[in-house]
Picture 1 (tube, rainbow, N blue to C red):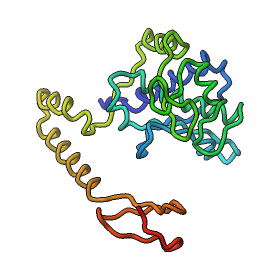
Picture 2 (picture 1 turned 180 degrees about the horizontal axis):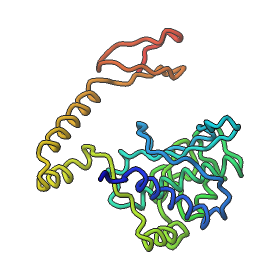
Picture 3 (picture 1 turned 45 degrees about the vertical axis):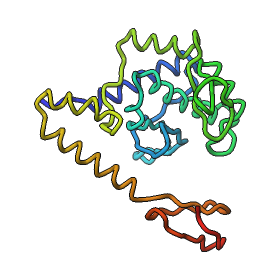
Length: 232
């Protein structure tokens, strides 16, 4: 019988969302479709109304995505819950506050984060700026976030799966071999090596004026056709 891994894993995130919503937002959030999405450079993201009902009744649903590749770098679930809660604050601000331009974390966002027990920081550690375009965070000792994480731990709510990336290969591959899955382990090593090779074979170039992006081989000389400037 096949393991019902999909429903169980997504239920884990749903339980965490519901607990955070009840404990930290007084149930103000109307729900979101939580997805696992790989997006380069992002541990997660929030998108307003990105899903619409197939029943053609006009209903829409927000999305909160978690990047499964980022989980490979987390020693425990705390930082995964940080990502989820960070995006929930974006959802709260979108519907109950005044968000700034796309992707910017303003003072209202910072205030709400502190209120729920996460300290915004552009460095992810103490002393970082609390507002800005790119923002990380860290738990406030004795704060509401860590209290809620304790409630999740008491219910044995945990994330069970993560992407097999270069970050986890050193630990996971020997475990797979020990469990007798040598062939599968070899396939993973080969696929990860190929993916890393492809990453190194392409470079990103940007126009310093209009921000146009292009990708190509390293050491190319590219000009922006609109600005006639060398792309960096």
